[in-house]
Structures are given as C-alpha cells and as structure tokens.
Image (cartoon, rainbow, N blue to C red):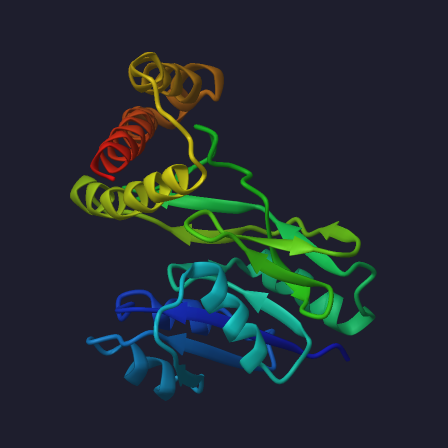
Length: 249
C-alpha cells in the first residue's frame, strides 16, 4: 500500500491545528514544522501524535519544501493549519493508497468557509490546488506569496474538497490582508514593476466588478459582497504599498 506523509507548517495555530491533524487519518505520519509558536500549537500537535520539527521562518515555499524533506515517505500531502480533508477527499486518498497512484501529483478542489459560510462562487471555488505529490517529481515554488507546487511529471485530479477555514470576522480578514499585501508589494518591487496612477485607481474597481458580477459573487450573499470589496481593497493596498516602497528606495 502507498505510504503518505502529511506535512503542515505552523506559527501560532492553536485554534486550527487539532482539526487539521485529526482529518489526516489516511496518512501514515504527520510532520509539523513550526517556526517559533508562542501559543499551544506545538503542545497540541505533539499530543495528537504529530512529529514536530522546529525551523526558523525562511518563507512559505522554502518552509514547505523543508517540511517535505523531514518526512519519511516520498508521497507528501501538504495542507495548511487552517485546512482539513473532507470525508469525501479522505475516502479518495484511501483508494489511491490501496490501488497506487497513476500520476505524479494530484490537484483537489478547495472550498473556503468565510464569515461562517461555505463560498461556492466569487472566484473562490473550485480553486484547485496540487497538495498531494511525489516529492521526487515536484516541489514548492514562490519567493514571496501565493506559493504553489511545481510538478515535473503528470498531474491527476481528485474530486473531494479540501476544506479551508478562512477568516471568521472582517477584522481578522483585514489583519491577514495587511500582511499579504506587504509581501505582494515586495514581490512587485523586486520584479521592477512600476505601478501607474491609472492602474492604482482602475484595477481595484475592475476587481470588484469581476468578483461580484462576472464570478457571480452575488450568489454568495452578503459574504460575496464582502469578498468583492476585500478583493478590491487587496489590490489597492498591494499597489499603493508597492508605489511607496519604490519611492522610498
């Protein structure tokens, strides 16, 4: 039977880590790489049977690749601490373990819970991600933000949802957005991208209408409206920060 190692990177995830680990019954080991949590993340993970490794924060992609190296098995199931396998996805992985993989990596749809509601539009679903892969034929890439697995072989699809428990409040979303827009702005500056005033003004407006109308965010109710506004704000902050960083050099 195929053996799979689960890999999770953490920093102060005591609210989420138990749910993530408990959903990984189909895995033969769980490895948690922690970057200096000051809450009970490490304690909870250890009590649930995970092998915890400490490693200073090098960046998202680098930390996830480091986690894959710590695993005993070549097949890696990489999830974030605020994610969990659905029962349907778990069942699919059990079948894959039983019959063996036909591909070198697998994508899975990711469904997000936002402000307590499962989002099925707004450009958030199916949001397919490669999370199950043979580490000999794939690795994480991305220097700043929006890291992803880069496969060097064939890619298959799983149908069960990876559940993503995102922000439970708007204040939490704003706090997260501040961190990610800074990273995104740093990436733009590193690439030498110059942000014009027309783009700073027009792109957030276009983002709102694309998310709310063309990606049918209105079908997600009030939460869809919030997602559209936050998406527009994200782009504005990203570009505004990039302009400020460039002018400060």
